[in-house]
Length: 426
Image 1 (cartoon, helix red, strand yellow):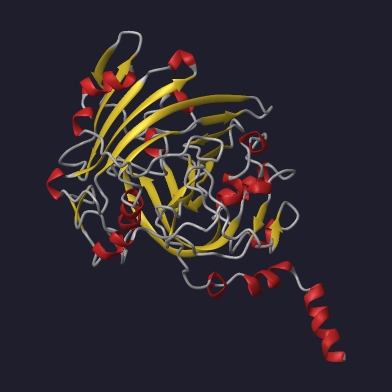
Image 2 (cartoon, rainbow, N blue to C red; image 1 turned 90 degrees about the vertical axis):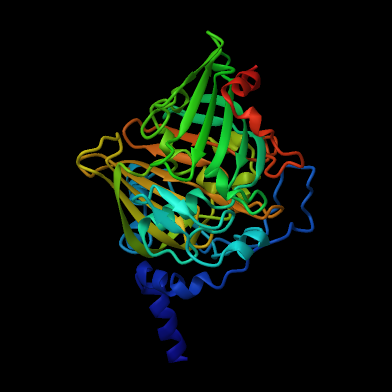
């Protein structure tokens, strides 16, 4: 009896970080259990992804009262900054780790060994459609794994964006996009030397309607830099737009994100020194089915999204630092990126100014779109600490028409030309 009382007393009076050590360790993330087929209740006619882990209960909620206990071990500097900046509202609900991410079996069958980095990491040679670096050993391996992770084949869809001001007022925008992804196991054409082709069109707000962009991305930005064109609805003309790269800021971003921050990171890498900071265990937004299934009007709260609907899990991440070279320019002098070791998605990022102070924290909550299967983010959230505004970009939700990731009829490659852009814009 005395022994039982003493054990109870240890748990009752022990500091919370002791409890954290008991529940957060490499063993607690468990083995991978990829979901490779839709759930029985999944309906392909609906844009809904039932939560495979709906019965899971919250293990712990981290908030302003207890985050200090996790500051040195499980939280990133950006998350700590969120607690410091929004102590009344920011919290993280922690759930069991569920390593559910999967890719099509064809991707795994092609994945045998590491691809080859060439031209100082600006180019890649390897088996198209595979995971390019199944055994990553340097920083740019993680970056390339993220850029070339499986993301569909012949794609069509629409996704809105939202900018939320501190007073709760919102700016809304929407658009359509078609894309042809060459890095997949179904279009194996190594001679093309392309990552993909993308055309986007703004449909809202009306003043920007039909402002359209065409981007053709190669597998080697040193030998073949990105090609891009824009269509101006006022002049009804298409022009080359070589500046749509690096820290170019589209008008829709309202100064919150650069073009090379779309989808976490994209484009040329030559302006930064890249450093592999190793793998770490961190609490990351993961299996965000509850968020995906929630009405958008419930999510868009001042300062940050409604944290009641986000799920965080202990995740093994590969951490990469990008630091601006002395002879280069970019409005983001330093970035810290956190890549999921399982799916290779970027899950979060911090950006720093030239005094090494955090400018913004970014999150990319993911789900397994298990009818494919593939893991992708349901939005990118950028929290700007100077203006206290935030941006949700590439939003995917049950409220939005479903993205088609693998159309039955492939896009005509001739569409991805300046003349095709003009037709697409109209």
